[in-house]
Image 1 (spheres, rainbow, N blue to C red):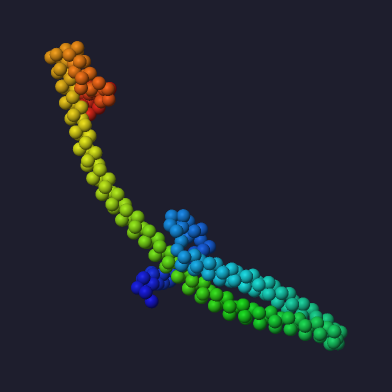
Image 2 (cartoon, helix red, strand yellow):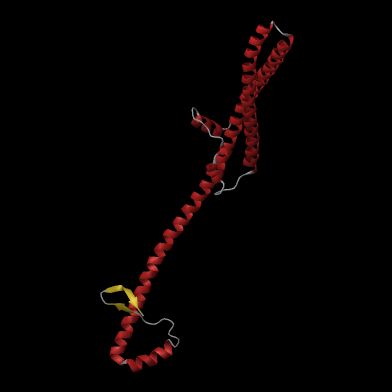
Length: 220
């Protein structure tokens, strides 16, 4: 037995394992990840066994009903035979019902043996399916965890760079605002306008002045 199997078996001791293919939550797992060929094969095999099990149980129920009906018919026939003085026709009816009851018993014994065998097969296949499912899901979890770690590290670095660049942006904008403000005061707006046309004719980056009392907020 593989080491993983030993670990899983130990964890499952004394616990009831649901039939996975009958559990809607199991099917929902594979809206998050894909089934492997091994899982598909085991699921098909399990479904076949469960279908056979259900068919046998239904037949067993019907046979028990028939047996009960036959047993219920024998008692009145016995009473009727006693009153009629052991009529051959009635005895034949009793004999036929007895034969049918024996056939019912044989079928019930056969079904019981097969159901016990099916129960073991279903458990074994269900267990294998569970192990394969867990392997696939844990592998996906491991891969996702690795991606999450890498993305988290990238985002952390990006946040640091973003903060640095925001500070640089604010400092540059403040410097520009102060420079233009002082130039307006020293040289006058006419000279500054000529300067603007020479060095920033498209005005793609207009100077933004800070809002009063909040150096980190700007308006056009």
